[in-house]
Amino acid sequence: MGHLSHRIMPRLELAFILFCLAAAALAQESSIPTPQAPGANLAQMAHITLTINQKTKIKTYLALTLEQQTLGLSNIKDEQFSRQEAMLFVYSVVGPRRFWMKQTFFDLDILFLDEQGKITAMALGMKAHPGADPRFIPTTPAYKAQYVLETKAGIFAWRVGQELLTTPQRKFLAKKLVP
Image (cartoon, rainbow, N blue to C red):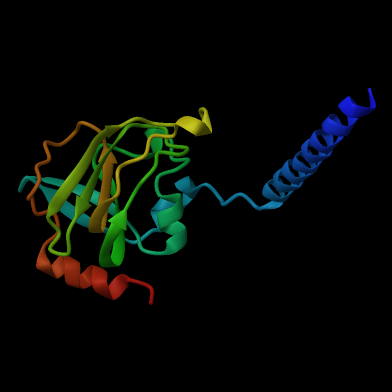
């Protein structure tokens, strides 16, 4: 009996320590304020109009700050975001960009654009993830991009090489970035 308890006690102590650490982490995580859902803030975001396929105009909200880029379209309900709207994530330089679908309520087409505003990669039909199991949040591969455009899935026929941002729009966006 003494020999058995000698082997079990260190494991029980380790289990107890791990339990305490996990409890402390959960307590700390729950004390972090949850960011305000951006749905009410869309109307206050800067926006531009993109023309798709030389005919369709879409209102495009600009995610310029780290906070706007972190929230993206999370918590936006389907009825709050029309088929004629998009969100453009604007970065100062080309770099690897990876997007996830945490707290999204509709499927998205996610387009990765180079410094010339041309599509270089696409993640089409990314599935919504409205609070489901966090272990299975759909995530795009990392693609090099300076701009990333999100639209409701399946509305437009996108193609790699398609130019979405004009030179005047790119110059305008460069001025909008927060230093």
